[in-house]
Image 1 (cartoon, rainbow, N blue to C red):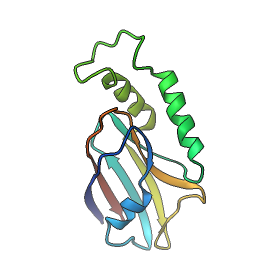
Image 2 (image 1 turned 90 degrees about the vertical axis):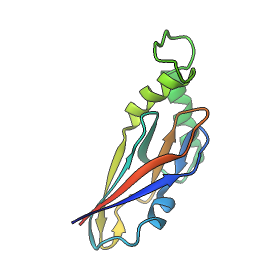
Image 3 (image 1 turned 45 degrees about the vertical axis):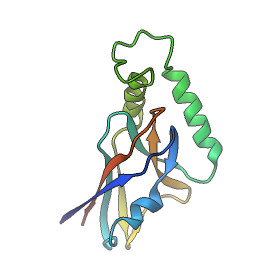
Image 4 (image 1 turned 180 degrees about the vertical axis):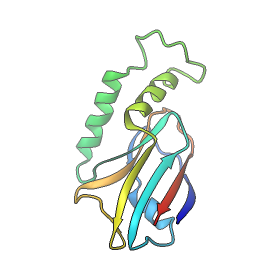
Length: 136
């Protein structure tokens, strides 16, 4: 059985934002066993799983992403929505648009230091829509 739960996230600033708790509070309950999928319906933001204990990891992510895909200095053709437009699309490809997490004994089987992140790559972000799917 598959159940889908749409969720609109509030506006977040540019960067990496832990959303694990927000996801869990927007679903009624987890089954004993299954898969939780989180899918973002946007092309200038991503979803990832990573370190949830040390903020400097996320600061380093932001620094590396900006180094690899700068807003200025490259001749981007797709700039209709601003200098961050095409770089945001490229960065979202690195992160991806979904994650899958096993559900075991009624709990997400995340590692001890893992969390689910919204990867926001726009300077003037808007609300982001995600779909949470539970496959049991």
